[in-house]
Image 1 (cartoon, rainbow, N blue to C red):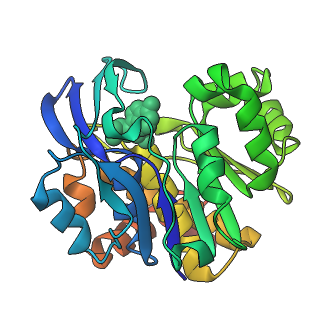
Image 2 (cartoon, rainbow, N blue to C red):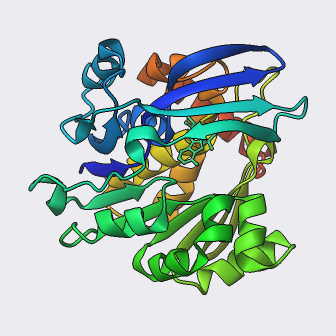
Length: 307
Ligand code: AMP
């Protein structure tokens, strides 16, 4: 079953302690779609400018990502410049230019309006609502958000939350939205705002999942070296949502396995700048690391208790 995803596609300049890239393909939906497509078909909704490189459009199309909803508008493409601290969990936004995305108000194609699975990446809650309002009867709706909207557009975000099933956000954002410092209290408070599932992304510390069934906590896949953390959250969401779509809906078991695939794909994307590693994976790479992850988190000691 296919997924409709709306968000940014743009060019990122990124500096980390391991180097830098300039105007590399990025944006929330780029990462999301390139991860989700390993599990389910994806159709994107985004605006790019006249400077968008043909090779980047091809990169999506060659991976069977539906780009009919990627419209080219007069003007420059969305651009973001970020700089990571020595502690890569912390980054500063040096500049952000919405450009052609600033007044983007998409009209979905007729088949997109019939989507069963919808992902509203980190864009203004009003734009998220505008897109969601055009989808006739979605089965599962997930959304991401960020500190900017929580601080500056809280009312619109609070209106959106009862209309979605799953919210993804990072630990600081969960604290901001809930007003609770403790993450368990924060997750539970956000559940009361509307979504049935809240996924709190904690970077290298993993993910906390709050659902009607309770709490599920799982670590990030430990890596010796992180080159560029950009897009880890959107990649996580892409693999997670891709798995849910492949399973045809939400169950506690699909949620948990989806979270694990999210952590697995998230661990690949940070191994290189931009989407370079993410775009080139094979299913074998994914399954090998997935099995490694299961072994790593095997707290039932199933392999050893029988010895
Ligand atoms: P993540 O590291 O998962 O938060 O995603 C980073 C991606 O989000 C980058 O590729 C940026 O281009 C994009 N991005 C950064 N800031 C914003 C913003 N304010 N709105 C939408 N997308 C953004």
